[in-house]
Length: 272
Image (tube, rainbow, N blue to C red):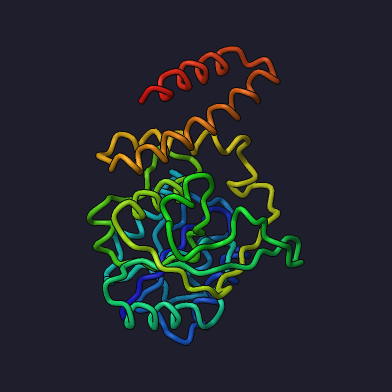
């Protein structure tokens, strides 16, 4: 199995070294490792000296979706694994994917369970982020349960459904996996094979308030596709739940314009 590993990085010189070390420690070695430097102003450029075998690309800061997409476009392998620069892999991760896909050749995407670490200490993962073996589309509608660093997929999926949405500053992975789950089976490797390090102030999950503001954009985009009636109903149900929560928050903080926008959308989608 030939695998391209794609790592986007923005001002992550120190954690990027840890991420790359975990790739080099894999029992199943990838064919290529691609680092996309998304306009860093720290020492990230030096990573080429520490890991001379990587393929390093620099671009002006355009966001994580653009960086991943550039990596995809420059990849040469049939299989693609994503790794965020502040995460790391267990040494068996890629080997476990290989075993699953060789046993199940019709499955073109898989993901793993994960461990969360904050300030060097393992923390309990909230129940809403627990992983699942089936009904991936339905169970992914409320929250993004699939971490990019946990994913391996066949490049043909991206040729069929498209790349990451560069208009989304966050929740781009949520939107992507929903598009995949509409058309493909996604298998779970029920082992904690990635470590997600959190707590940095500049992480995207910490940078933006009200993540549901971005999730509703992704759900609205899904409704532009030709969805089976059952899946369309699920998307609308989830949208209405999120609009109601956002409306409640907007009213609480006297954001009149936002409140009116959510009221209009609730009325619109109630009759879809």
